[in-house]
Length: 156
Image (cartoon, rainbow, N blue to C red; front, side, top):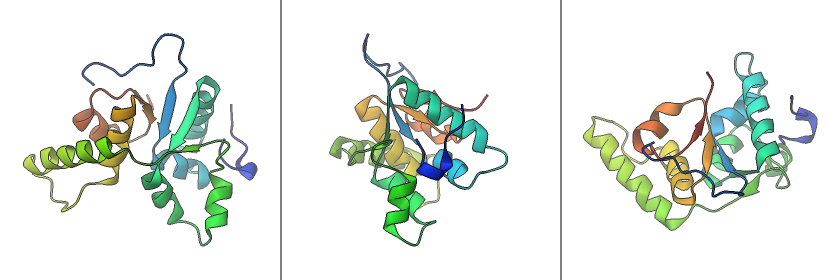
């Protein structure tokens, strides 16, 4: 099922929704950019994954995802049109997710990581872990490494 791009985008123990609950899916920036840029390699997969997740439950973005997507736009109104609040519930980053992201960053540094501040994927993964959300992403490595409880929707 393709998404209409003219009207916006529609671990260890896995964090599964409780019986009868619909899954909530946090959408990673790379997936949204695939759709918005009509990426030749990943656009169709990403649009289908988002549409399928929307059909099963709610889609969520946080300020980190919003900021990363915003870099490609000149006006906030254009970002809001591309990521309609009716399609993507906007949630703040929970404070416990900030704590978890910091600890993931410490583990990253201990493994030899060279970045000097927490990476966006740490905030996205921590948000999903704290809220027990699943994540649609193409870049599974940071999520599987640092947030193994998060259920991932990935290609392949």
